[in-house]
Image (tube, rainbow, N blue to C red; front, top):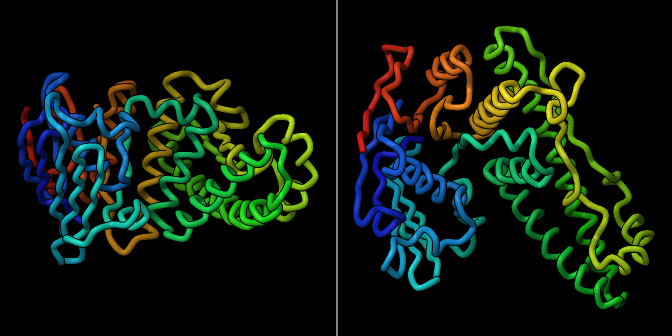
Length: 346
């Protein structure tokens, strides 16, 4: 998979811009506030249908304009494709190869990629919701059925919560059955990907730390997926007092450990940042393993939060990827002379 060109109109600070990319390393250089991250944001928008900077599409519209246009031209298995994201007067339209997408599930998986940001350290030290979102976004790119069950679970839970708040048990068991079926699927898929991520994350962290640190990952399901229906019924009276669901995968977590100690509580800031890097690299490896095409790698402010040695080792690992998009305030020395580097200076 290779993005050849990106077209922007009225997207954030860009009135009109077109960028051409190389098949391997793409280094976007410039001082802060020049639009480097915006280029990554636009690509990520076409991968996931959402921004990593804001949930509000209005914030991406250039000041004084009524909407924006983002288009990528890319090649997959020697066939040219396009994705267009049009936002005009608070209406969203997405097209893949000129065909309209009925929902985001039609978009996700067309372009695949992993994203690394400076604040990704929150994956280690932040709230469980951040780690659940990480797993959900990765699995959504790999498995369309996961998107179906995630959507089904969320909608059923919203309906159930409405009935709980109204203390109305009529038809609530129908939503509980949907939550139980889809919830069990979500838990099983999350456990499966965590087991796979753990192996790759450990290998990358071993290389970044020169063999000094061992990593383990565990998925923490608060309740057994086998009997969710029974547990929903058992908890119903208590949940009516609370007004929301207290059981299910929407409350689960991912635990990351260095050695035998939980990284969130005991790792240094440098170790947390290194572990985050290893986790994001593991994400790319799994996307690559489960896809017919090679995913993209997007890195904002490459290695800015790592110490000198780990930063150099991170840059050396970039040579293992296919097409890479990296932003930096200064030139970078990629380690492999065999790889082509395309420079974009802002």
